[in-house]
Length: 73
Image (cartoon, rainbow, N blue to C red; front, side, top):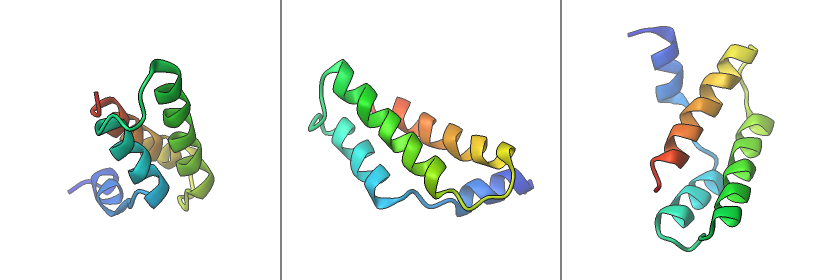
């Protein structure tokens, strides 16, 4: 198992980000502009609360969340 994969497996989404992902999936959040705003908010929450040490690891977390957001629709 690579270090990157291990870190992503340990990464826990903040509850507010989970709520955003679920809101988009369930169509409680709808409309292109509201979905975009929610996605930006989710990414900024992850970036602000990141506990990793390097910029590369922050980008890995952001990419993980971005993929989760893209999979909602």
